[in-house]
Image 1: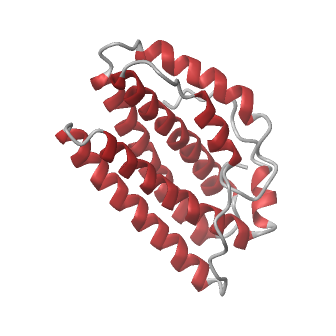
Image 2: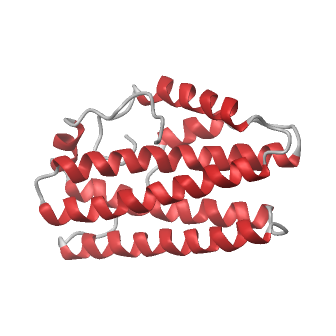
Length: 193
């Protein structure tokens, strides 16, 4: 369904398990940034009522996930660490098309968002299937389902509003680009690292 070209090596979970505090802190900030991204799209496209409605719900869900991860952090006796840079997301951001029509910019922002959700969904699946802590496995299984829904929302709106963009062709470019950078990741205890 997601079309990702390179799967995450399940051994990445061994790295994650070596520092649960770090993965949880990184994950919390990923959720916060996802909410902020949805709000940014709303701000820039406030006249699209259906998009605003659905992305408001998505932003609330991302903030709820942030709260859930923060609760896990507290339950483990940890403290939410400082925000981390997400180098993977920053590399994806560079691939977004600059210039062009306002509509094309919206579509590319939606595809950028879909890509992040697709990889997060895939990573949560790997965690749910391979992490030893069964509570975390269940938690990540639920988030995997949610991320798949977010991916579908972003892809669906990209297709709906693509008046001057071939979404399928552009999505293939995104998949190819993501494959070229993801091979440098999966070596740290971060969601995309």
